[in-house]
Image (cartoon, rainbow, N blue to C red):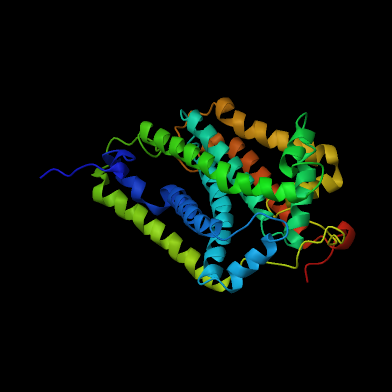
Amino acid sequence: MSRTRNFFDHLHVSQVRSRVLHPLTSLGLGIASLTCLATLFVTGFTLFLYYVPDQAQAYERILHISTTLRFGRLIRNLHYLSANGLLILAFLHMSRIFFMGSYKRRYLNWVYGLTLLVLILFANFTGYLLPWDQISYWAIKVGASLAGYFPLLGETLQTFLLGGQDVGPETLARSFALHAGILPFLLLVFTSLHLWRIRKDGGLALPEAADEERIPTIPWLYRSEAAVAMLTLATLIALALLIDAPIFERADPAHPPNPAKAPWYFVGFQELVSYSAVIGGILMPLFWAAFLLLAPRLDRSRSCGGRWFAKDRWHWNLAFALLLISQLVLIYIGLYLRGPNWQLVLPF
């Protein structure tokens, strides 16, 4: 008896090459990212039912969720860890695609992926303020000031994020509207487009091999994806039982922390801005954007996409690795080596 095709069947090709199931082919980063995204939607909807985006009530609502609501602390921890996990996994997924040259002949999907990365950053940024505690308040203030350096649109972008000239009630309401309404919709749209393009392109980008065995997607690929999803979810739950989402004292606009730092994913640019506003706030973000958008177009290497660290792509891989490492170093310095008045301090 033939099996009725369902929604998930339409997302997969009927047969895949055996290499697809090898853990080192994709590292499971795509499925792990989707699992984090699904967890975010489920936990976010639950938190949505209890949170109030009002300056006078937001902080108490977060305390209520974390301390009084049944399973509230676990749900908030899961949401916090999934958000940070999704951002890290998305960066790793992008890095895997780049190092394998999998963007070749798939430029549109590469652009969809970059758009998703920007949306994930924006979703984390807008959600960061919602607890309305001291650290999140000043982190958003610093982050919005960094956005002000963006060429041509900086002042407009800053005003849009803040809902005015400074952090206030409008900022909280706007952040909540973006975080809980607009951005989830856009994430769903571009995730669907991303998955659709993978399906249209025939699955994962891999070099052709005439003698490579092809196996049916059902059940082999389904089992592999389910295993990654369950492992990711189990890891999130285990971490949520051990790590609490931070909540600090109530936001106090009159007493800034010293130093006030941007969210961790933007603190590398804050570190650069401390050296040079032009380099850190304008040139470096533009260079990153141009590099990621143009590299697939300028890559003339002959190796086909889907091979780790192809020899004729070494200069592209080296450039990307140096950029990535430099940003990680800057984030580490900004997070752990900057003390009062942004002075360098020892980490111990």
